[in-house]
Length: 486
Ligand code: BG6
Image (cartoon, rainbow, N blue to C red):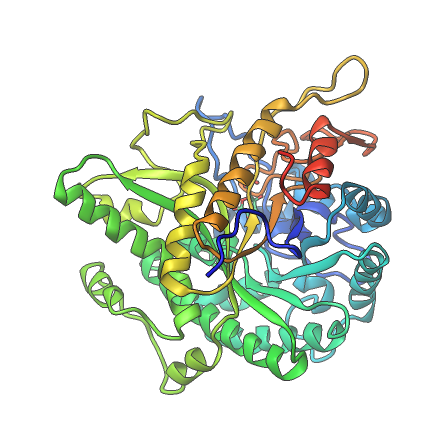
């Protein structure tokens, strides 16, 4: 085989977003309420230390939010008003040279409660307009079917994905959007970051954790139902769009062993297995053998039906997508299995600097991840999210000089290029939050990732004016040179 010292010719360069973090217009044109519309703003610094997960919702909170919406802020209801600004925003993406734009469809725009038999035409029409706008500039849409939101009615009626009824309800939604956009969308991801079910049952699976006996069991049961729904969507995509490419996605966190002690090394193998459990099922079409022991140790018993094995086998994905933000350190300790699926790690890596939200910055970890995932699946890989959340400050000349973001992205893009040279097949890279948006974990606007500044604060006040940052011009140059000029 030939040595690849460059990004491939048709490499997909762009940015990534999610409907619930950008669209706003939460009650327009027949849209129903989603789980993310019920994720209220909670001060992430209330404990004195930043809390990256203020997005969980309990049954009591949900009841309160429903009865007293005026007493709470819901930033994901207003987003950055992409719903009305999509033309201007896509034009800015085109100016940077994007040839791909990752976005998600809001399930509740299409089926407001999930339970209707016919879709909401106004919701479908909105995404037609968005995809047509992308096509104008030669931008491929890459669409996530479910990115951290679902009809709140399905939480209230079924407690979300713990109930098998959701499989068919999702399949109906998937078939409708595949059919409607079959000439406009080729690249799909079924579920965003499925492994995050282990961190927030509410966000990933619409489950009110206080209503289940064993949250870990519920997380894996909900995941099983999502595996089935994802496999059925893959199957439908093959029937409806013959050249569709459908991927799975995890938040990949590489776990390094703390020391060379064999037990620490073993724990690192086990922690990485748990992270890759999701693509193991979705890329190989069956549960991996190691999970049986893990389930036994954790008293997890998944309810399955006879047809499930065949469904999983027939719904294998075409590619594996990851989001990548950090690596972790692990060691042999009693709570290691519990920590393995977690987003936060109590063990610090002395070699790494932290972001303003305490996320370890590790570009080499991305290269390691890509090498390992390709070794494991030999499937094309897509970096669907990577980026730096930071507090940007508007300078006196109304600019954002975000050299720290350029520095972060430069290192990570170089790592992708190195992985390609190592022989890995990576076909695209989309920077998370290419335009400033509402944070998923903290609902802050002030946690900014974008190349484009959006004038709005955490309370939703501001002109919504879009201002290209220094990184905007830098990324434009990167894309124009196909990743050579970093
Ligand atoms: C990923 C999610 O986990 O991380 C995105 O898919 C999210 O939705 C991103 O926004 C960054 O997380 P946060 O909490 O900084 O918004």
